[in-house]
Length: 152
Length: 162
Length: 290
Image (cartoon, rainbow over all chains, first blue to last red; front, side):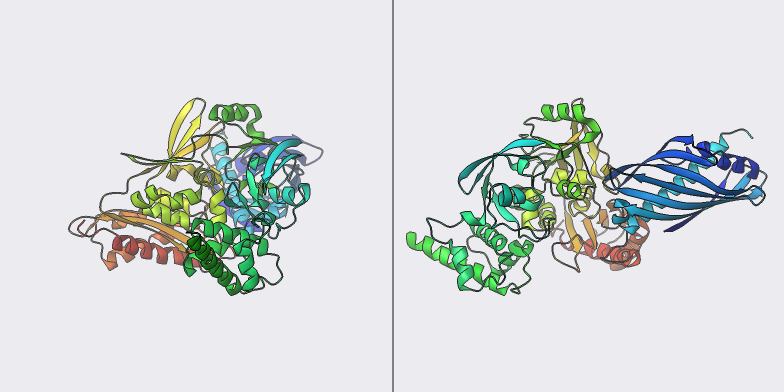
């Protein structure tokens, strides 16, 4: 499932890029995320508590920074997490691109290509898609809020 | 973990020591040994698992046995009267109410429950009440005719009882 | 199903005690028709199930000057067959009659259905159109939640930890109003609606719309009240043209999930069609001389 989000954040390209590269801080903007801890080179362990319909889940796994190109403003991440107890999991290939719009505004493009496994896959595409989109949109909003409140 | 569950099934008291997650259909079939009640869809939709709990038609495949602790359960094995087939059972035999028989216990329990609630149902009332009992064999008319015949026989018998 | 412990409290105090003790690991069970299926599918895996079956005084139906008070454990069949409801608020009896099958209605309860938060269910649109509220009881007291505000997201309601939905309050229908619940069922008779609409319409002496409520089910992650469509019709003459113009706004209010019953586009189109039919039929049900 591919989801694309385009938003404008109230900060310079540099500040936005800096926040995205600070993975623990950027990840804190994902609704439901707890405990993002470094685990080696460009890797982080993270836990995400989420609800889809009647199902509550605690997904644990890794965020890996696959590549980053500061000049182009592009980065690629791999997120793999599962909930053994529920028997469901998520695998996302995420790319983020920042483009300066003005000195204080940056366009942020997020493309997430996600596979849902186990119990999550059973819940049905439409509700999962909706939940995934809502999560990404809220992530984007939280990033904006964090950037707005951070002095450059 | 096991819990004590007391059920009166077709007039006989049972005291069971079963897990909380035991479904009523499994309890009836395996713990008590009455295999007349069938499980088909497992989600309460098809009606094959229908039993009476304190006189009301329930889907035993989505009922926890522990939840009906203390209740009176009536299954297909329990509706004959004094060794004679219940009029609904007899009508199903006389009017082609079944072919393979898998849905039949549920159909008969539902029909009995209908006629107790409404002894003179119209054809539409029968259809509405029985809508939750699916059958893959008969095309339903055999079942409807059986129920209509049972109603007539039961009312005649009640009438002549005066 | 994962192993669990079943509790059969006989009073609300006992229920609160169990909720306190087991917190997140406990689920309350009313009729069980939704919960047992979810547990079978392991969508829900509580370590403790608190059954309400033997908690007394939760299954009565009373008529007060303000309206109906329906105990949370009243079964759907009880509500469908209630003489009191049939006379006082026939829309409710009609709506509950349309749920699934008689067998399910014997087991399922009004409270359990609401707390489940399934947007495809029949009772919520009708109850919301009638302005109903839920009484949430906890050991610290009661709070009354308008049903419109109870549904937050897909299978998510505003029930707080430690709370039990104990009754549903349904105000008297407005004087001189007609009400209807339409369930579009192109598939099997025991299914959820592809779309469903509840409408309550009252009119002034001169034929203008005094008030209207249009609430839809199966068209989003929660029941949806088409407020813009209502505002567009309220105060206007109830002509065919005005009704059609108003219900065209229903399309923007809904956000259906596609499934085997239809695509999102199809359901959106049908939402408008059935909203119009619901308003028309509700109007036709307004007592003469109102």
